[in-house]
Image 1 (cartoon, rainbow, N blue to C red):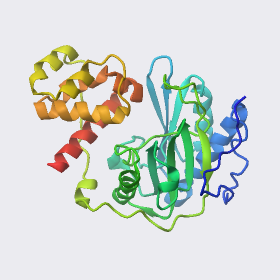
Image 2 (spheres, rainbow, N blue to C red):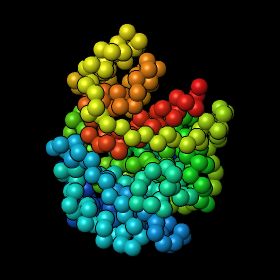
Image 3 (cartoon, helix red, strand yellow):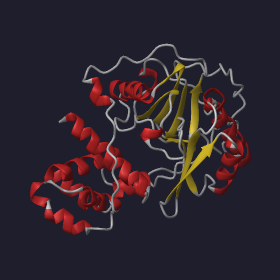
Length: 330
């Protein structure tokens, strides 16, 4: 039997629960208790329903353990709890990886141009230490052994570009995932199960939470702030238009040896899928490949499939984000 008591980080105080969440996630082995806790947790996160008004949307997403297929569903303020309960029951944690988006959108489409102001900062901490972050996070949860994600509940809302700027500063300054700061970010849902093949199905467990509003902000990065908030490209690809091997051979002479190796891998041998995806897209772009050619290489890449499944939306988003960053850095 796993230890299901709340873990406590060295410097965090998880006793402050203004939203009456102290009794959540008492038993990670109990499916009913977990679903009940997940609904209450999501309601606490999505309390912008009352502040912003009607026609507000956010998202839950699920990745099939059996097929890798990605299922994403908008949740609107007309029936958030009921919709979430139905989806968490349909896409249960034993057959699906479960994700949520903390931020609001004015259309039922999780694209940056539809994002609304948010009161959150977020970070995929990877293996960095939660205690090192400043300011300290409001909520921290462990997604797999010694890997973490976190939310900061700011004392006021920020427009999407500023929210991204704070989240990017947190990731870059303290060792988080440098590709995980966009406002469309999906995070693993507390109480879910991490089904990555390299793990033994660990629960996604709380480390600490304190809903007291965070007044301090991370210091912004010194680099050009405009580059941090540029709009992403609108990319729509057809990953079946080209043959992966033919594309790889076509540009082989102009690719860095590591990129050639990554494109030929049949398993995800390298750590940090996000970094390997970035490396492949950047290398192909610099070699002159078009977006459909890049897409066909990523579509069956183990680094992309392990992270996103064969999800066309995520494919387009990854390519758009990376090409947008490369364009801004030129």
